[in-house]
Length: 120
Length: 115
Image 1 (cartoon, rainbow over the protein chains, first blue to last red):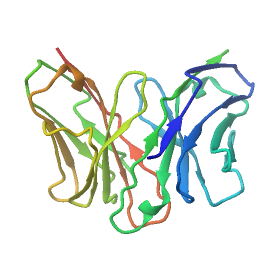
Image 2 (tube, one colour):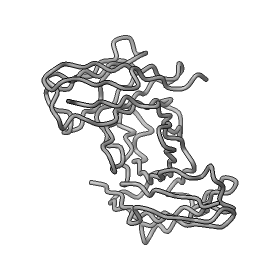
Image 3 (spheres, rainbow over the protein chains, first blue to last red):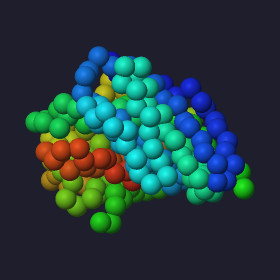
Image 4 (tube, chains in turn cyan, blue):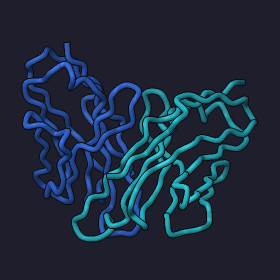
């Protein structure tokens, strides 16, 4: 079974600075997706960024980028130029690739999250 | 795109009572998921529908839990004879199936508190 581990329960960053959130995972599959989701307090979970395991190039979305190390099973999120609105719980999640076809599940497997505080 | 809608937002009930939650997915999404999130934890998968068919259920989903999606549109999650351990946030998500690499969109969740 796949597992996702986030070893940093809480992180803090100064506004405009850069912060990196860590995530490791365990799987025997060769093809899969990895995601970072953001959950602001009392608000819905939103997708920040996603990475396909077969792609060597690291995904980037504006101020958010990932460092995907497939051999090490590591998937960290870098937030540049941190803003007050980035304060939230961040979850790393895994999804099997096979879920794209037929009736196979697309369930997400989440880590325990990292609570990010942004200091003004 | 009106987003995934969940009702009610909060539910407080006494132990032993039955509760039902509703999820309205994004209109063109044929896949629907239920997750449960307890305090300090990430969401855990409960069950998955493709159209009206329930294709997977987690072992977390005891016999007291039942989910339906009768016409492939909205879904309900019912918990019978609620227990203290059922207190959690219940999240619904939806996505488009049979299309490559489509992410799940989440609702605001229903927070269940058992007295």
